[in-house]
Structure formats: C-alpha cells, structure tokens
View (cartoon, rainbow, N blue to C red):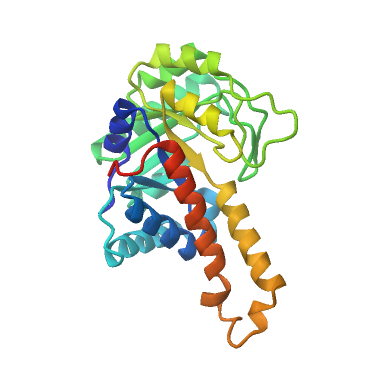
Length: 287
C-alpha cells in the first residue's frame, strides 16, 4: 500500500537518517527500486518528474503501474509516490492521478507568489492525506529544462515557507542536479545549519544527491536532512551496464536481443546503486 511521505520523514528526522527518493523512468526502474527497498527493509520514495510522467504516458499510468507492482510484488515497506519539481498545474494532475505526495517547486516565483500558491496546495494536499514538499532557493543544474545556478536559500524565507505547514522543505545549499562539475565548492553547511535553526523539526530535503561525497551526505543528515534525491546516478549505472552487455555481444547470442534480457543488467545495476545509497543514508532496516 502506498503512503504519504510525512510519517516516514518524521521518523527519519527523529532517528537521524534519511529516506532516499529514487526517480523512476520506466517499469525496470520501478521494479528495481521496490525490490531493493523490500530486501533491505527500507522505506522509499519513488520520484516522478513531469518529463518522466509524460514519457510514461501520464501520471495516471504511473500511479496505476506503481500500485499494481507494489501489490503484485508483495511489497511490505512504506512506499510514497511523489511528484518531483512539480508545477502548480502538475501538482493538481498528480493529486487527481492518485499520487500520495507532491512537490511544488515555486522557487522561480517571487516569494509572495510562492507563498500564496504553496499555501493553497498545502491545504488541498492535507485535506486529502497527501504530503507536500516545497522549495526555496533554486537547485543548481538542469531538471526538465529548468536551469538553476545553485543559489543558497534565504533562511528567513525558508522559515516563512515552512510555517505554511509543508511536510518537507527543499532548500538550495549549493547542490546541483546531474553530474557535479570540476571545482564544485561543496555544500554550504553554514547555510544548512542556519536553515535548520529557523525551521526546527521540519524534515529538510537534499536534491542532487548524485556525486556528493559520502562525508558531506552524512554531515547533511546530521544537520537535519531527512530526504535525499537520487536520479542521475541510477541512470549512469543503468547506461554503463547496458553498454557493457552490448559491447560484449550478448545481444547477439541466442535471444539476447529480447528486451527482458537486454535490460536485465541495467536493472541489476540500479539495484546495486539503490542499495549503496540506502546503506549510506542509514535507512536500512527502518521500515
């Protein structure tokens, strides 16, 4: 059964670990993440960007696939289905489709409009039992065509958004979507600490979890990060394993061209990456 992300993140905050959000792109992705979470007895959040939702023919298709897969695989750990970097319109589409959690990314609006739209969506989400994430300060890199330079969020603005009743807050602290460039200065822990002091018990979210050194991840969790988003790293693992399969000529042996065989090494690679991250985040055995 799918659940909202709220309870799992409250427990993570209290227990000083983080729950991983792993973005899904197709059936193989979803199956690999769910099976790994069940094996490790870890709560998990399945993230869906608007681009991935469109690719999979719509949010209702995604929700139906995830619900049926969760049931048919016999998954017993808490699973949240979460809209990642949602627009105002996208949030309503996911609410209608049956997602259990949404993220409204109003970081590109001025603070007044961000506050107004976030407050409206908080009220709607909570009436329906959904959890909601908001963002302050643009996350660096590119996500579905939205480019951010990795600004640091204003702690006062973070408090203002947190006080609206959101369940989790993504705040820019120098993190970047995608691969981290050479010379990246690292996370701004001074900013994270200041945000934590302003937002109190609010679970904080770290976007751009791919490529951040393990020691920085652990320190971020110590400073209040309870949810960490991973996408690019799984994509790279999948691509690398698939390339090796084809370069080894496996697709030319017997029925190696069958997509179930062709995609199997990539699916196993995703499992390995998810396991590594869950162990790093400390969520193993916390379901």
